[in-house]
Length: 386
Ligand code: COA
Image 1: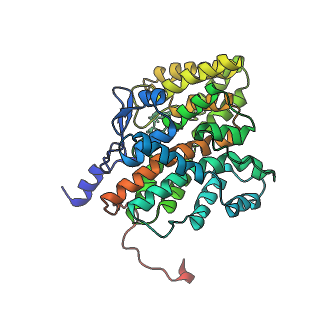
Image 2: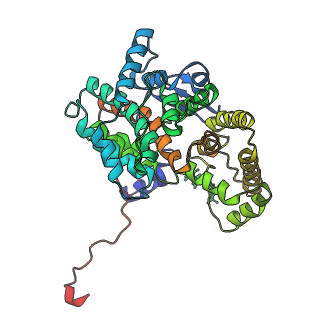
Image 3: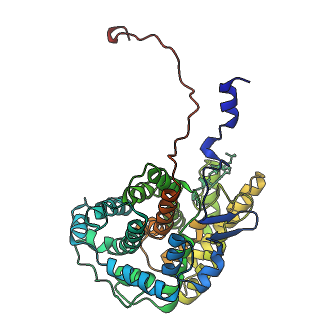
């Protein structure tokens, strides 16, 4: 076998099934339909933990002791007030700027004001990660007000990150149930192995670049509709369908034109529903009941039924992923659709930073090879002869 043939055999489009590195952060057990952070099942974390504690777990590798959590939360609180220069930049972005684009620019810009910006040590990266987690949520909550030239609410130091986000965004104290469900959403989106944005973050980390560069690149990767951008696409789909009696015809048209249905399918969960979708569906049900609004979930369930029947008829079943029910949950929490993907980024910030730190702990430059399929040995043609 020639070297070229060997390379071709090894090649996997989209790196499907390729093991690209070692990690102790996240285990996805697709067969058992379970997801673990640092060995803990997320189904337990959403009941017993909170986003702050889970973020610490991801970053440090173990659950914090009481004093450690108190100090971590204090660092988070003090980072919630955004540098005025960052807020000012938000007001200068062109009208109608996509909120993910805004978040990407502002997170990148925040680096200039970080006291550890020139320090790439593990300790400094932990401090920067703590600030990034707080700042990203605070920026995202303030974006709608800043975009409209209004003064955002100052963060409330008595609130958790989840409570504070809803408070700053909605301008009212969230109920205990709203805050708990949003906190669970943050936990459920915090990490997911070598997904596209995290792998992007690790590639940047592996050049020994800085944490802000790494997470800025990751935000760009998350934005795409095949990744985090799917949660907004799900909401747009539900909105464009509008009512339960239109689901069937709308979906049949999508199937006929070969369009991918946002919120369905997953590279890792090939044979079952994403475990996060199972947990988020329960949250959507709880919120629907509490708010007396069943339309979103009814339409979602009808979409799911149509996708299940269609995909099974092709013998290629696909299942809901994390983005399918999170759209209904966020909408029921009164969060505007254009903030859905930024919220995903806020949550995944914990995972990205954990992966950055882990990559630096045992680093090797990530540099795969391509399978060259272009022309060879062409004779150069002078410009007048082309
Ligand atoms: N709607 C309709 N068909 C889908 C589908 C979807 N959402 N997801 C996968 N499929 C079909 C594909 O068309 C393909 O069928 P084919 O072999 O007849 O062409 C088969 O299932 C395998 O899909 P493929 O695109 O090869 O899977 P992948 O691992 O490359 O892609 C995703 C995974 C997530 C990118 C893909 O499922 C997708 O685009 N989903 C919609 C976007 C989304 O929700 N993204 C968030 C992921 S958390």
